[in-house]
Image (cartoon, protein in one colour):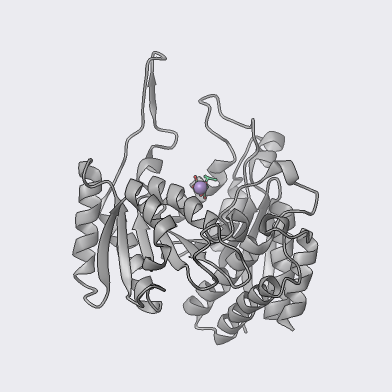
Length: 361
Ligand code: IPM
Ligand code: MN
């Protein structure tokens, strides 16, 4: 395997400990010297110390690296005068400036993990939410209007380019998967509120146009309110769900909750030229520094990073390493060797990482 430079931003709260855990596992999986982790500053804590949430040198290093690995960012009370959180700008600026337009959020129930949806066991829930990550309601970040303390407004922005590319990403992903657990059908579900707003009707229409290029993949539709019911009543129907930014943010947390929670849910924020990988959870400052956070989401995000790099660099060794990381996590959880607290166990962050590292062997 060649060597790859990984821009690494530990961030705030539990960010450092889950990042270090993932690095331990990834180094073991890929062998010494394959991944060069370039440690970089950023987040709400850095903002408090320096006035910068994303220093230019961090941005440049992320832009020039082979991939970006991130822990978490954001601290309560660290907000701008307009009331919005500072730490979130670490993610949002990287997303918008590096054009990370597909926020890929696997929702997979692993063997040994108990779902609150009792009817489902490992393998019974396996879909991916592809969240448009650069526009939608988030296009108004820092641009909303508050007038005379009487009225506030944020615009929802849906573009043809933004929708075409995220829909294409979703259909291409469905073509690579094995279909929904329920029926094996390769399917993309368009999540929107086309019944109410023209913007979402436009989003749906563009997804339909893109579907025309993927005849072998089924398309279906679910309104953002209705899909929350279906995700609980028939999650095995879903293969890939594509959604506007804000809806994707919301339903991906609901989906994560059905497969063990935010501590087990990875994410990959992918553009045509760059990608950032992080657990879908936040910085959990209340448990920071206690070695009790679950590193599983960040470790699985690291495996997503290896897969993405393997595809881009045609590096079969990285793909094999990703398989081994995912298999090791699965074995540790299925055999209960080191179960983190959020999954009902008592294993510490470092203990989970060590168990996964050993399971690689
Ligand atoms: C997420 C988070 C982010 C978002 C925050 C941290 C900016 O909730 O990645 O889901 O709102 O997208
Ligand atoms: Mn979120």
